[in-house]
Structures are given as structure tokens and as C-alpha cells.
Amino acid sequence: MLVLTRRNGEKLLMTNDDGIDIEVSILRINGNSVRIGIEAPGEIFILRAEVEEKDAAVREGVGSVRDGGSTR
Image (cartoon, rainbow, N blue to C red; front, side, top):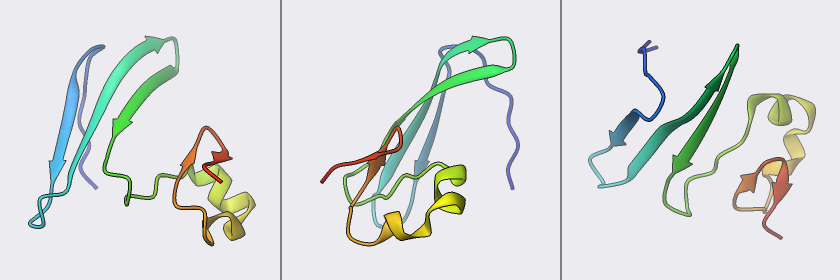
């Protein structure tokens, strides 16, 4: 695991050998809550860990999840 410190407005950029780029932005910090934005290609599945733990079946056939809702 890589651990970094980022400030409000700063970004992380991730790229693999296939040219898949993911950008994570720190949008707002409020107390112990951090609002992040993630830009990734549509084929990248993004799921909050607590959602996966609660309902692993959501990964079957939905393509992507945003804020707990599917794109169906």
C-alpha cells in the first residue's frame, strides 16, 4: 500500500502499461470527512468497499456503480 498526504485541490494520477489513466482529486476536506473525485475509463469498475461487502452480487453485470446506484 502506498500512503500519501494530499491537500484540498491536489490530485493523484495512476497509469498502467496499457495506457489506462485514473485521476483521483481531493475535492473537499471537512473535519474527518474527505470528498474525492475519481476520473477513470468506463471499463474500470468503481465500488465503495462497504457496498461490496454488503452485496457482492452488485458486481454481476452492472458495469459501474456511482454513489451506490447502478448505471442500469
